[in-house]
Length: 224
Image (cartoon, rainbow, N blue to C red; front, side, top):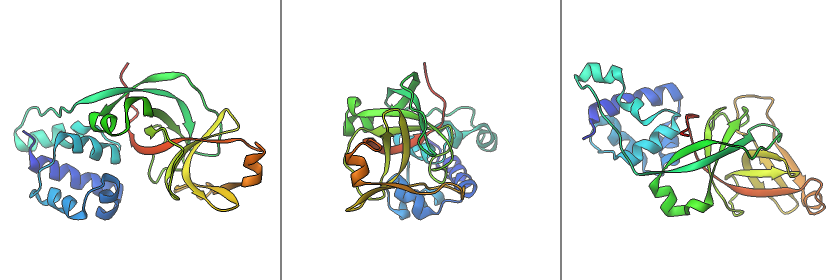
């Protein structure tokens, strides 16, 4: 059984370290902001699957929410978070910066909560390593992004796109009547939006292929 007192203390620490608002955390976890408040004051329970998602938001291991410091305060020796997962292969690198260098080499496997597999289908999921700073408000350099393979998106969605065959990027994507716009989400002021007109894309100058929608990112630790 998970200890709510330990969890709420670690969650509060994670929020303070991240500077995320409770509203932003709730949006990323697809829960009501009141749920976050309930976790913080110990009124709401949290299941192991949701802890996996929370850990991904803060780029931490699920066990971090029950770490050794928390154990020493509570007298607990060990807590294990167990949730059904499926290993999804992680391929190459997708550069979160100006498009540069897409590599198909498999780096390892990412354990993905079973609910994502059920919702999207194993064959429709792809994990990619992030390199760069252009999305570092949401996705840190070196993290692993889980991608749902689809060409459909709404303006503002974070999409993985291959440009000119061997170049890739992860950006907020916006489709306008005359052009496609890529916008970073970065603390780095040098990271700026760029765009291509419909005419450029239709003439493959450059070719633009939308490969999927970003679901969440996780720590860079993989399994073989």
